[in-house]
Each structure stands twice: as C-alpha cells, then as structure tokens.
Amino acid sequence: MRPIVFAALLALAACADADGVAPANGNASAAPAAPAASGLPFRVEPLGQFDQPWAMTFLPDGTLLVTERGGRLRLRLGDGRLLEVAGVPRVDAGGQGGLGDVVLHPDFRRNSYVYLSWVEAGEGDTRGAAVGRARFVLTEDGASLAGLQILWRQTPKVDGRGHFGHRLAFSPDGYLFITNGERQAFDPAQDPDQNLGKIVRLFDDGRVPPDNPWASRGGVAAQSWTMGHRNPLGLAFDAQGRLWEHEMGPEGGDEFNLIERGRNYGYPIVSNGSHYGGRDIPDHPTRPEFAAPKVWWNPSVSPAGLIVYSGALFPEWRGDALMGALSGQALIRIDLDGANAREADRWPMGARIREVEQGPDGAVYLLEDSRDGAGGRLLRLTPPR
Image 1 (cartoon, rainbow, N blue to C red):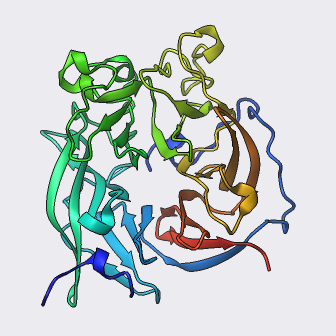
Image 2 (image 1 turned 135 degrees about the vertical axis):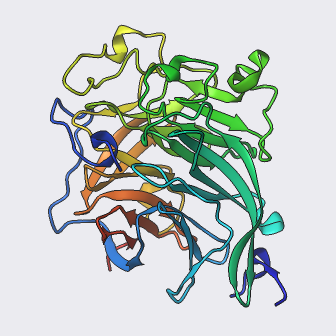
Image 3 (image 1 turned 180 degrees about the horizontal axis):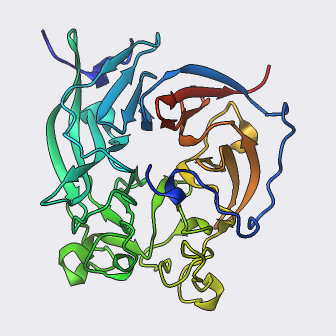
C-alpha cells in the first residue's frame, strides 16, 4: 500500500523509592492545599487501559502515542481504537526498565521524527538506556517506525534494573535533553567520565554541542549539561526557556530542581533524604556549592511525569508545573514564579500516576501505573461543568 507520512494526515518498578513505598521520615517542604474528598477542581474521564504504560505524546491531529514498558508502542486513534506500531527496538524489560519515553521532533510536521528511549541489554548481565529516532509512517495496513537510528547510549552499561531515568525533552532552541539515573550505584553521579547520574544535552541528531560545559574534556564527559542526579523521572521547559526536573530521593528527599548549565546537584554527597536503613546523608544546606532543590518532599511522593501547563481550559494553572506521584497517588501542581517554585495543590487520584501530558485541546491527560494487570488507565481531566 502507498505509505503516508503521518504529518500529512492532519485532517483525520522494582525498588521502593521508584515504585511506591512512601517512607515516613519527616515533613513536606511546603504544605499542600488538600482538597475535600469530593472537591477536585476537574472532571476525570477514563478513556481506556494500557499494559504497564510509561509515557505518551500527542501527534498534531490529536491522536496519541503511548509506550508500554514491556516493549509495545501503541497509537490511540480519535475513536479510541488502538494500533500497535511496528518497528520498535527490542527492549530489555524488567524491574524499572523497558520501553521508556516518547517525544516528537519540534519540526515533526516536516520530518515525522519520533524519539524513543528504552533499556537495551549489554554483555553478560548488564544493561543501559538508549535513545533513538525514526520516522513515523501510517499506511492503510497500519503504523510503523522507519529507519530507526540509535543516537545515544548510557555509558557504561551495568547490572541491576533500577534508576535508568531516560526522560526526554526538546529545548525551545531545538536541543535534545536526556535524564540519566545513577543506576543505584551512587558514585557515578559525581564521575564526569560516566553519563550516569547526569542530564545530557545533544543536537537533535545525537552530536555533542561544542558549548556544553564539559565539552573540552571530550568523550562521554562532553555530553553532560549537569551532574549529581539520582533518578530523574520528569523534565520540562517553561515558556521562558527554563528547564525544570524532578527526581526520586533515597529514603525521602524527592526533589524538584531548576536545571542550570554546569551545575552539580550534589547526589550522593548531599540529599534531604537518608540512605535506606536510616544511615544519614548530609542535607543540602551543609554544602552550599551544590545546587539545592526548589521543592523537596519528606516523606516521599515518588514523582513521575512532568509538564508545564500552557493551555486554555485551566487558566489558573497556566505557567505552572504538573507532576504525577506514584507512592503519593496524586496529581501535584507546583507554582512557578520565575526561578522559584512551591507546591500549590495536591489532588488525590486514588492510583499511582506515572505520566502527565497536555492535549491539543488543553485538557490534562494522565496515565496510571500498572501493576499485576491492574491499573494502567488513560484519564482525561477537564473543568467541572
């Protein structure tokens, strides 16, 4: 059948901190405005269910791509039907790893590039995240990815199945940013010659920009934009081009950070949480040379998914961040005021929220986390009638 590039169709969880046990060891850094049980400021409409969904992104015509951690990429059509997208890379699925994020190239209408992150196997019992891009194609026979190119890999691959990070975001000026967990190994976050525990900045084709802060070191170090991260699972730009990130702390100490070129965010030297088992980690104020979080949580909320809202349906949220909470089972609104931030609202959702996205209609869409065949719903939030 004649292929049709989609841009032309515009008319048509393994460890406790990542997957949900909230340690009880302190107080939140900002008291949330807790709504009454029946006082949510939005209507919740279930739209369907997925198997271990992890991320989603909208195509220009309002259809939706959803990744499932086991390795499937699904296309949800406007009438609710689901198509499986062919051509997805083979993933090493298990624990926190598998198929991860999905985003569109900023010029998707012209080039049809879709970017994916996933976990791939290495030698022996090792694995690491990878990022690639392919052209999204729709034919009368179905949807597929064509010409997959691997652009980047976590270095080195290590054993274990936790703290991959691998969230993706494009900056307003077209650079690709990638989050990297320290793979539960602590020290790599402070080693410039590994990209574990870093946020990476690349050109859209995977090349390293010469103005990266450690570009003169060459090698893997040249990729990094910031260092000292634990398990970053949310990444989003605001309208002024500031980059915001959240990451899971150890036992407590989840963080919401303003990401600035060349900064070190301190892990594992400092954290507002503690090691599992209670062994202390010095708090951020003890080492002012490290960038401190703008908001932090004790006990943990296990943040996952992040947007900066810009739609018209919820004008009171415009310019604020929305993030999901796994162990917190909530949607959290963070008021952004220039380079400052504070938690403004926390709405209980009765389920672990894995992903947050804004639709073309200005509605907010959530993916529930899926465990043991339960959950995994796609939810649409709209203003109450």
